[in-house]
Length: 254
Image (cartoon, rainbow, N blue to C red; front, top):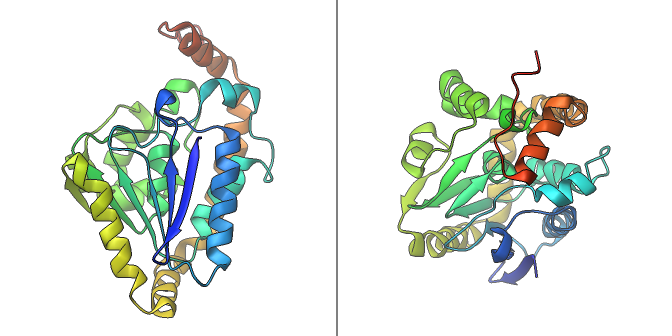
């Protein structure tokens, strides 16, 4: 099983459950998450959604082999539906992160309302290291949240950073021991689920509506660049090196 979904006490939990691959995400998993978000958005019995992995791993990002076999094509691709769904989700969205949160594992958090990190959390956005560019409107949202210089460090160098730095950047709300991060996120979700649903929806919409069009435009621009760069010699070298477990050589490219 790769994704587990459970709804209880008005909370839908979307759980990454692929421990042998550190919860790396496949196209099928993106499709399931997108469908779950769409269903939760329409279900009046669901008042909050929580996304989490285990106390050992949130997600290692895209499953590289699956990604290369099923590259995203167009707005109907599973990853595109997921990104649009999480960006437009109108109910409270909470995340708990322990262990690696790589690539989309970090950028998806920019669309969550509350994010809680375990002490082992390690965030990274290594797009340039793969010859690619940011996605999920992270090139817009991360500078807005963290400031340009910190966002440039994260998005251009792509080096991992820990939970305390993530909190200083404004990416997470609080840092807790790993064993407490997921339960605490569920507790916070329970608080949200007991509040007036309409008030929460309106509050979230008011906070986000000023940026909604800009986010959609940025996602489209990133998506177009990403698709082009995915076919580039740099990306081919990066992915070949990754699969061969060697260091890529970008010196040959200008």
